[in-house]
Image 1 (cartoon, one colour):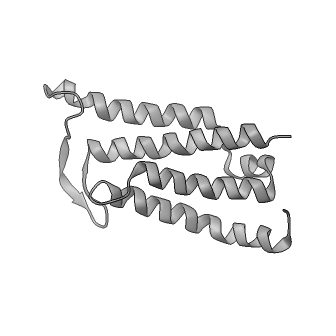
Image 2 (image 1 turned 135 degrees about the vertical axis):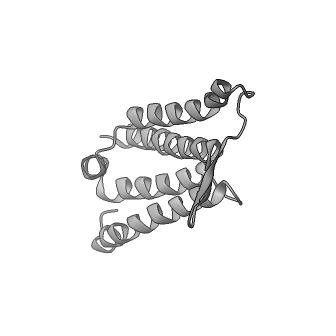
Length: 135
C-alpha cells in the first residue's frame, strides 16, 4: 500500500502519534495512561510508517536500533526500581523530588519507571515489526 495519499498522511500524522503518546506518558503517572499505553501509541505510528513507506526508510529516518532502545528502557526502569535501596528504603519505593514541573507534575521514580517502560515498549514492538517486515 504505497499510495500518495497514505504516504502524505503518515508523514503528517507521525508527529501527532508521538506528541499524543508523550501526553499519555506524562499524564499516566497521575491518572490513567502511562508508559505502556504511550509506548504502544508511538509504536503504532512507527509500525504504520514502516508498512507504508518501508522498514528501511523508517530506520533511516529515525535512526532506530531496537535492541539499543530495549536496553535503554530496561536500564532506566531498573535504575528507578533499585535507587530507593541506596536511600535505605525498600525496593520500588517511590521517591519524589521537592519541585514540580508545569504540565507534568511532581518528578519521582514512578515517572522514571514509566519512561523506561515507554522506551522498552517502543523498542520491543519496533523489533518485532522490523524483523517480520524486512524483505
